[in-house]
Length: 216
Ligand SMILES: O=C(O)c1ccccc1N[C@@H]1O[C@H](COP(=O)(O)O)[C@@H](O)[C@H]1O
Image (cartoon, rainbow, N blue to C red):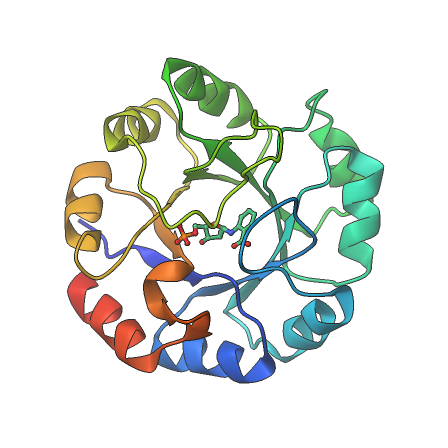
């Protein structure tokens, strides 16, 4: 089994970016404005961090925009390598984003809730470069789009992984104690986490070290 790539999310400073890369992150998550969640930072800071991320490490803008032109406008303020769309794109208009930003990778978040999540992932995998399976509930009055610290039903995640042919990231409540089991059970291309490597909201070097050791 190939060792999964790791994306460290909720990066909130240039210093945290450097620490995450030093400990082994392949990608950094930079959270734009959201209806809820712990990791939100402003445009200027996202842009500042994205500029110092060295190749081959990727920088992901997390956007909660759901219309292509708004996603494109959000992206143009920050210039990351990748856009992580954390809410559903109503009309599946990925082509508009592709035409405007041909060199930017698109990752669509699927909130793993029930059997419909499997159908949704299979359908969306035709349009994007990777899917990212997270916990949360976009149907709540205040949408919960990620950063929950909770795991979800990995049976469904595994079914999705077997049903699609593009890379899949697993997120939601991952930490040093459950990551080995997550890798063995779901066999994702990548892992994505926020709260599992933080203490009081700050990136914790001890937790980072333990998490990367647990992956092996
Ligand atoms: O972190 C946030 O603020 C956030 C808000 C809205 C959508 C996604 C968000 N973060 C993503 O959630 C995953 C999982 O977080 P956790 O490990 O369960 O705490 C995280 O990796 C980000 O991609």
